[in-house]
Length: 306
Image (cartoon, rainbow, N blue to C red):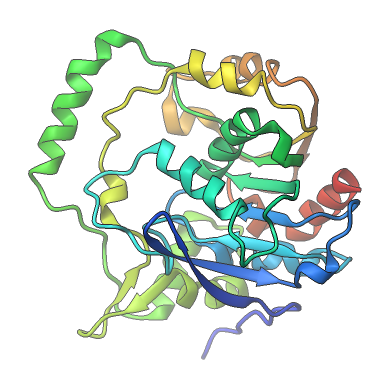
């Protein structure tokens, strides 16, 4: 029996723009005619090994029409990878800054509401402290950051990176879209079957052999040779002027990712550096809370964005 497929409530337009020498793919709901001072553009940025279409369920759950743009980060979805053998956090910042100034999107010269999930949440937190004048409201969905590092870790990290460069990076292919959907549900058991079936062709592409390849550059799997410097991160977070909405799922367990290297108490200390924070926990929800509880998340967004 064929699995049911989710039917979007709002149609997204697929756009391609040039950003810093790369062909970037965007999804847009609504248009710039919907923008008012009280309802600026809402820009959405996905996490690692995800795509812009991941936000469709949340956008569908918003009650009011508004201008929303979601980007496939470089090397994800339909955005070009650029041929790099590694990915660097400053490049995401540069891409975001160029996106918000792009003359064709109706964002240039405006303040925006900015939302990021996971890796995207880490990027938007930094950006909101670097360019505070561009952000009216800031939303971070489970962008916890990374464990703190010390300079003594650098030699081992560089050696690991050099060793990984010697081996080709690969992602597992899948025989069918049903297998891709099953992979999505294995990672996130709370993802409904119809949403997994809809997301699978946005998350993968069929190659010449007939197999389905995940739309993510395998080079993203390589370790970043740059250490995560918490003092620099917090220096940016302290400059955030916009109110921040922090949202997490009640089933998220940081210990599964980092063990004792990054306890929850340390994250709370970091978050205290942000001047204005509103917190919410969604239940039941895991890391992909925009899949697990799109309606509840949309209500929180609307209350916060006003």
